[in-house]
Image 1 (cartoon, rainbow, N blue to C red):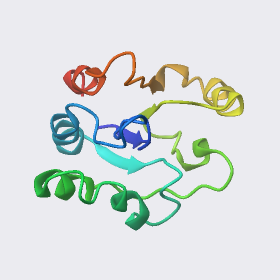
Image 2: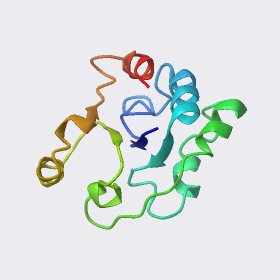
Image 3: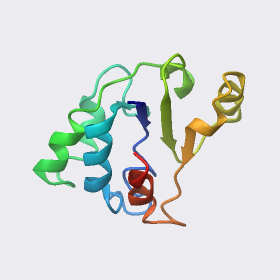
Length: 132
């Protein structure tokens, strides 16, 4: 079981439309069933309410129930502050700062990041879900 750290904008919600990414339901079902999922997004700094608000009215009740099981993280400057580097993890994000890449490198965790690009690959979440 891994910790899965999830960004919202550009990963679970499409930047262009603000709508849920394709295959969000399937991805979340697999992620929640097999791993501990955490919000790692500007919409969550210690509390999940703002993160969940991004999905209200955009996803069905079943998906919202899955999203409600995602745990909060708390960080102040860099998202990487919210990661527990002592446990196995994957981090899904659409954009990392150079300083965050450097921190991943310091921990030997460069392969723990999955850069999501829904513009280039709208089916990326279902592809990631296959390996969860």
